Image (cartoon, rainbow, N blue to C red):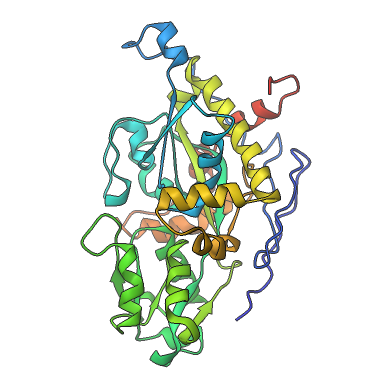
Length: 365
């Protein structure tokens, strides 16, 4: 089925960014204005006391993320170009900012990061115990889809009722499935969730074979795994797509302390500027980024290229992030039985000061 138009988020004056052209993604979020959700940083902290100041100045910025996803493309491209030799990229999620290990095996990290990437879902899950967490940039939007088997009697979203659906629990893809099911009056408990979890005995790579052998009827997860499933099913595949229901906001995170650190902050500002440049390059010509993603994810470039339209790279901080988080926290809160947070409680998680510093006139390029 053809996807409906993506709702456009009205642009605010600063900064103007080229709009991505995607055959399946018709709209692009806008940036925060100077007066919107502007949060100052804490008082300046000292550099890492374990390093001499000169060594701290030249040490690379540690950037952690999920290297197996299309969302990470701008970081890989920045690391191969403008930030080459200035950043150190490793596998991990946002809990690495606090030298902690989370409950998602694919995001286990070795060491502590200075900035890290994750969806807003993980930001909501982990921010209660780590209130100094800050979102500073939108690296990518993941425009999710559900792939199902026609041979399982599925011709519409409502036909998913009673079916076995593969996804990764406690993630943005699980939230997307929740939104899509609810849009046609199907409750979460009216389907059977089959968990696939990266880094376990049942990794995401098994989704394709589970579909082909009839162990599951449908799947939803981030790219490029969905493209592999669609390719494997061929004519038996049916796709359900609604970017209006939900778009993952894959973000760059740091901490209030790191943003106030006089050694780390200039490096973080430099990285965000490089991510803006990389995002623009990807929008113009994604071929180099596709090659980098394919190598990092150990995939063939053609499959990555076919999946590419299901992500956008806005190169800014999207203005609808807070609204997305407020809606999603209702679902996230059910995991622990807590009350959903209010907009006033969630707003401090978003720090626009780095982006504004990048855009400040006279900043070195």
